[in-house]
Length: 95
View 1 (cartoon, rainbow, N blue to C red):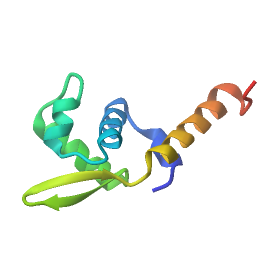
View 2: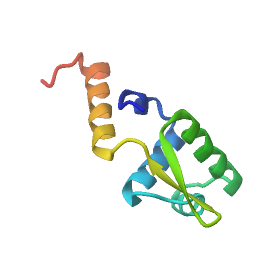
View 3: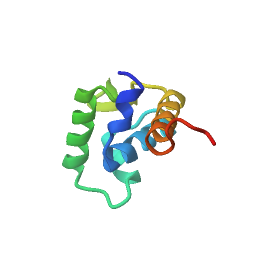
């Protein structure tokens, strides 16, 4: 997964990534608990599975639970998002 790919996250995917980056890892239940205006538990699980298929997340098993972890360090994702914003809105100029 490249840093550039992280710019194409939907609002909900970005919220999930923020939760997982802040915690370092999270289960679907933990994500559900921390999401603003959360969808159903099954919708959160589906989003996590989709984000894993896209390469944003990976999982490890803890008993019967999946624990989701980011595939890209938060600092790398931050730099990529800032660079994209600079390119999109400011023609790569910091002035």
